[in-house]
Length: 415
Image (cartoon, rainbow, N blue to C red; front, side, top):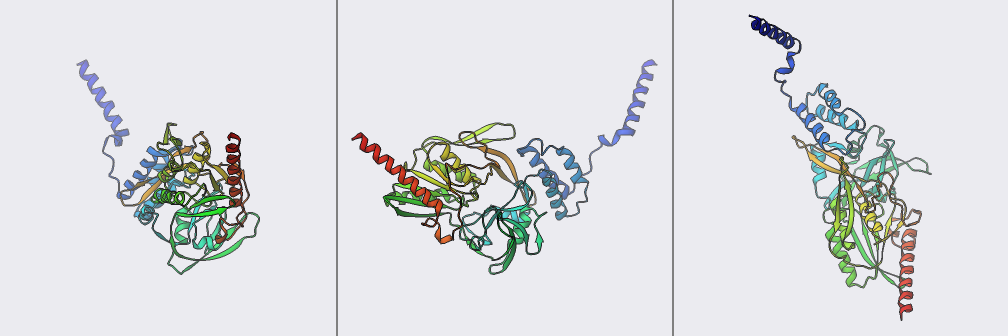
């Protein structure tokens, strides 16, 4: 009898508990497709994002808030994802709708249509030019690295995402777009650019006779999938033509594929460390060069404020390994690595998953790389690059001449 009373007491308590909290033990309501998309995006960031504090906030609460909002169609789901990502305060972690995601996946060695600008958000959230693409309408219009774009047509850029800004600048070949530009030390100006087809040829190479040197001049404009092969071919051709030293021009090179930067560093390096990567757990990985360099001739690298991302990986690797001397201005300072993730409806995410350090463990994010010889940039026309009017180039030529003279003296002293 006593046992029966105890059982009834337990049963009564259990029923009361279920009445009060019973909703937790029934299956949750099925998520809509829009909610599933938002949840998928949240999980990707939750598992891979570099900052495990998620910008010092409760990431689970961010998801709950996003799912409480009405999600009636894909547009509302996209907006919810974008709002989640904005809380991270990371302009490089961003949402891409299906069209943007497909565009980003297209091989960058092909052709693009637009103005030809690489853009980013600076530390204050302003839209900033990383670099104009070589030969693009933007470069021909005089747009420079670090210019701030305050308006696109009549739309202020203050609250635009990178993708929204890029979308406004895209358009048909021959159409025009008006940009309002702010530049340090200059008055605000409105620039009208004619959109065009942009051919992305990443390597420009030629042999230049400078004083007593045969200089192999190579200008690398971006790191696409074909860049390592094309640059290796350029070195091979210049060697056959008698190059005895090199200038690698990375000015206004906004970067591109991480792997391309690593493979190009390997072309110049004997076995050594190229770059370290650091993930959210603080675990370090490394990429190394394993084979002899294609050439051991003296090398100078030209850099400026538009030298960013994979360009900085290359410049940092060759500087730290004492393979090259850097000339020019401090680089942009983008030391973060993004990875692309496809969502269930064909849209995607670019997520910051790691940071990189140079072989001497320098973290250059937001700091940049200081060249061995600082030479201020003086505005020149496109056709004046690598000529007597190009002061940074001339400084590199003089440096290579000094190196050649030192080597000749060393040989003479041994005889």
